[in-house]
Amino acid sequence: LDRDHTQSITPDELDCDEFRSILLAVLAPSIQRRGMGGARYKRSEMNTDQLINFCMRKADLNFDGTLSFDEFCSFMMCLRRQDDARHTANVIFALFDLDSDGHIDEAEFREIFRFFLGHIPREVDFQAEWGRLDRAGRGRVTRAEYVRWLQQSA
Image (cartoon, rainbow, N blue to C red; front, side, top):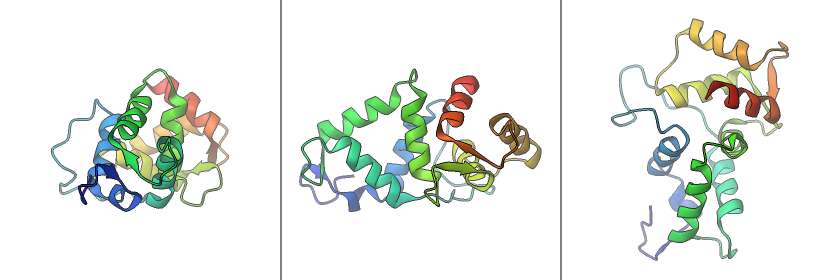
């Protein structure tokens, strides 16, 4: 990620496929992939700017506008904590809450589901999982509802 070899990572350097792949490996370590390609794969729509801003806010501990190796590793270790769905939800909302309204709607969840599967899900599978998440049938869920769903789905 440190493309300019300064021993730190800038926000511009985080805007890459490698960073998104690292996040997927951290957030969903059980998914086995060989690259991000394939006939059925289509990149999920993500709010990369919001993700990078979230990462910098949480990981740039000395507020110098870059991430040292230690800061980056600490952030990844925090995300790896399987016992805290809140951390995972924060990253997911940073990535996929495209309208930044604090909710995940059905279209945004479709992108989340696609991201974790690595391919476009079958509609029946998607609708079953969306139904488990949006139990109230409002067409959108809060972060707290998403956290509960994560805890129950793990």
